[in-house]
Length: 518
Ligand SMILES: *[C@@H]1O[C@H](CO)[C@@H](O)[C@H](O)[C@H]1NC(C)=O
Ligand SMILES: *[C@@H]1O[C@H](CO)[C@@H](O)[C@H](O)[C@H]1NC(C)=O
Ligand SMILES: *[C@@H]1O[C@H](CO)[C@@H](O)[C@H](O)[C@H]1NC(C)=O
Ligand SMILES: *[C@@H]1O[C@H](CO)[C@@H](O)[C@H](O)[C@H]1NC(C)=O
Ligand SMILES: *[C@@H]1O[C@H](CO)[C@@H](O)[C@H](O)[C@H]1NC(C)=O
Ligand SMILES: *[C@@H]1O[C@H](CO)[C@@H](O)[C@H](O)[C@H]1NC(C)=O
Image (cartoon, rainbow, N blue to C red):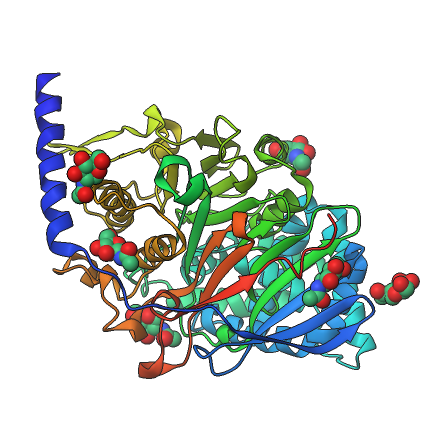
């Protein structure tokens, strides 16, 4: 026992010195007065452009109202071209090198038909049908299965190419070949077999890009007025071209709660979002290699929760009544209950068939790692009052036992987890109340600004935007629901001119004009 206490003490001292030498504010900007302009409309739905000094091309805002079919129809009618463009660049970014697009699309269709379409609720199937009908009604005939396929691609949030290659290889003699036989495409089957046999030796050493998403909620004595602030980073498909059509969608489904989803044209799920009830949702994965998606596609499930949950209790019970696909972390939080709910926010650690819920300052987060070789112990979890935060690893015992690549001290995911802890501790130690600027600062610090190797360099690149063009981060967003605001940054530009989202401009978006009456 004494040993552990001494050990914890040493860690605390170490942390303080880390804090002193590494702190700083990344060079992000905040645009508080972007220009909103109506571009076009269909029935009760509108497309706006949001122009900001930080972005060459305006961010698209879609404000969709109606039944799910009608919202989909309007989206297809108004944005099919952008969706199609984005789908093609996504395929370009994730298509394993030696695979042909046609074979790859058959793979996506198989995942959709045999797995992902099974547990998605009917309203989203209606919405997808509407999207397709709306595209055709507008004269755009190439859309095809773009939207379903986009749901499949976005269900691989980690390293899609790696996961897809793995799946193709492992499922070829199983479900995928059955599917190809069923749809009478034996030509694709033999082509893929040929590619695989030519490829056998190569490629086991392909280095993983790493997984670098993160999310947090904070409230109570840490924040201005006790308000809740939330943030989320998406580090995925950097430089792919999807940022050409940046999109914020406000869904106003008849009879359900309005909700905002931040993402890109062609992706109808929520990568991150907030509802008119103040329910915040987010995701970060732990990358699971063996996946077939017999669960609720996570990005659609997050919308399902936003449109149906009035409070944190309902959000949790909706989560529990639906199924996970693969291993991921999520946030569920309720901004309007910051001072009334015992636990207004949870971090969720999930895997197929199992979810562990963590509140703030959760004793289960005090996990001590023991090095299997040296026996050296490291405290991995640093839970705090009035804050929950996760990167890409779990603390729950069951989750840890099943993790494909368990987190280790100084590993990438843990390093970023500690940035949360250190930044919250810094604000507490300096008596700084977290308000919008500080919440954006926390969000920005966590966004990946540089390649994974450099995380171990000193000073770590998280506080420094010098190499912003190399960062993986493509969406970085902060929410202050009590004042109806969110601050949204996207990656911008290409090549060495590119700026990752966390180093770019956080555009203030007022939620008030968009949320409908519910
Ligand atoms: C951002 O957080 C870092 C600590 O991680 C701190 O050094 C810096 O001063 C903060 N900046 C602002 C604007 O709060
Ligand atoms: C367009 O609006 C009309 C009138 O509100 C409605 O009846 C119709 O279903 C809508 N059509 C679509 C495709 O949204
Ligand atoms: C969750 O999965 C189980 C089987 O594993 C299935 O019986 C159940 O219907 C699924 N739940 C939903 C809501 O789809
Ligand atoms: C923070 O506030 C406490 C209590 O008011 C005070 O004792 C402490 O000196 C303050 N710390 C700083 C860094 O201002
Ligand atoms: C994505 O980021 C990595 C690491 O910085 C970089 O090597 C790669 O070229 C980037 N990809 C694109 C398409 O920009
Ligand atoms: C967005 O849609 C909602 C619900 O139909 C409507 O109340 C609101 O006025 C619309 N906002 C804008 C800016 O068009």
